[in-house]
Length: 319
Image 1: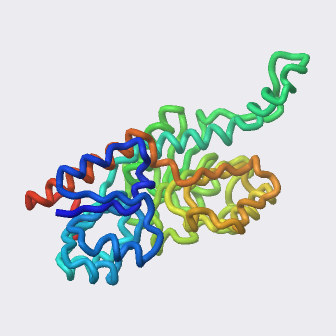
Image 2: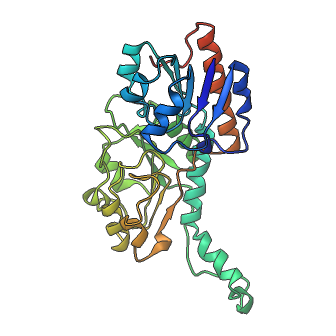
Image 3: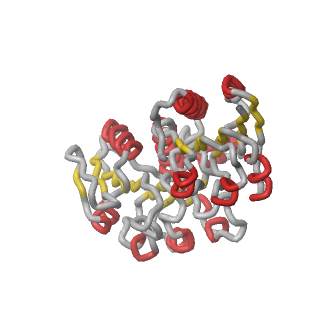
């Protein structure tokens, strides 16, 4: 049996990928850049592991031995699921592995922005604090999140965990269901406009679909408090990036933190890279899911998916 990992660089060099050799001959590719490379690398494989490499009809038609596609993520839009089903190729994904990591990053982004940590760190390291006549510095006042309203867009597994942690800090949690179908009796459901206008902190933990694409536009940002902070840890495309850049430059909201973007890696012409007050914006390169623990759990779950498939059992199987 032959296996291939098509984009091992997305999993990191500090996790053990050699465990997949238990199942047969393994080829590890750090990056697969083109359709031609994907076709060539998959053509003689029985099992492939992919995070973001596109596996479509052309790739599958040129892989006569392919029996299992393991998606190294929760989302599987990089695989043509319907065609895989027609071909009798099983597809698996992994869900829930990064919940703690994403929740942690949500609060890391919030506190970095809320407490102007870059500003204060620079103030000390620049030597300005050494010149101060007093023991403290009040250049960037910040507020406590206790007693504030935290609005969550997308109250799934991650959103619920964020809600629990926010409550432990004393926040009043409200939420908006992007599908209009999911309701949680533990928290107060609000319409989108009301959530935007009443929340001090808004975090997005929703998937990108027809209900969420371009959900947060300039008109929606105008509804928010000028002191509010917006965090997107769901998917790029939910927040209109040009509109957000405009809103930040106009001071419509206090700050925004993004771990996801419509195009990844970021386009050099993205308006967010050219805003006037860069202190209002924190962008991280889609790292919320990448704690060491999360990536090790992801690899372990992929291993178990393969093991279950070979035993003829159903586990995290999509088709």
